[in-house]
Image 1: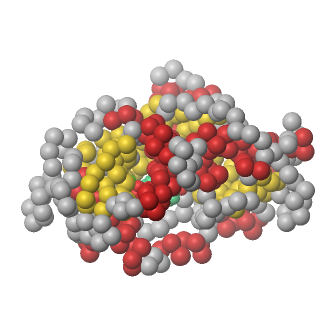
Image 2: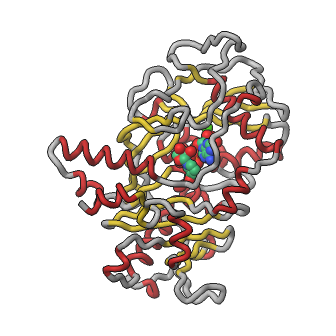
Length: 395
Ligand code: 0WD
Ligand code: CA
């Protein structure tokens, strides 16, 4: 249907440029409809090493072990090797997709046809932001979107100014984010059967933190009618790695709950934990800590049971609202992009910008030349896709 016929889209808003398309917020439109989400199936895994080099190995895979009682999360803070903040590029994910396609071709073909059937390619973090938007009242976001052969590629848009701001973290905030990584070090081992015993470190310490090292999983799933390929970091696995996402574990830290206010705050956080983990099909282990970073208790959550924990409470969230919004958002993106006139010239990597403003909605517009060159950032890209990937699609 034409954009103008879509009741979800209000293009008459006075704040917008004539070329902008606007999707209004879920609460202001129709009632929620149920949207299905398919259990994710794993396609492959890969690792980034200490120098951020990607390999199709499980070298960065870690195993879950119970952390020592009362572990100090501040431990090792001075030795943290922090990965510099970077733009949310999807290059690593594209390497994985290229490999999946190649494997299909090697075993009888169909790789390109398979990719044509995929509606969305993005990092898991991007999909988490989209799905949790109905309950986000503070942080807006911006995304770059391209469509090639019917597949939408999404990346988070991080401007140079935002990058500098993210790098310039306040000491207090920096320490808090270290607590999360430290919890991972205390709760994982390079061996499945026992805690790490590293010379010169307290028993149970899994090794000093280097945030360049990551183990990632790429999965295939489906939201409503949209097939998706999503990649994300997985903290560790339980026991032996079966290849199935159910042995994965997502590790989180949170302040111990001392009263109703803390509880409400935790339940709000659970929304993000829930969708982040739900998208890859990963159960969660939460380490509760004191304000000064001492681990008190550890609690496991089966991801699909989380919504039940918040149902009926003040400030409760409803995952069906998020899935319905996610489905409408993706259909909206497609209708704007496919509904816009295209010329041969346009095929050279048109980039769209989706902007989310809390409590207002999403605006989608086509980037002009200046906008696109900011996105390319002088690199060898077509739009934001690396040229090697673009060439591979065009072959
Ligand atoms: O758009 C995104 N979410 C970005 C992803 C922005 C920049 C980079 N990336 C990278 C991630 O580092 C990873 O290599 O893309 C890959 C996949 O990310 P994802 O799994 O989609 O990311 P997300 O779900 O947002 O975060 C997962 C974990 C975080 O764990 P917690 O428990 O804190 O949610 O990735 C880590 C972090 O451990 N992480 C980062 N680590 C260092 N610097 C960063 C960062 N900027 N962003 C996420
Ligand atoms: Ca984590």
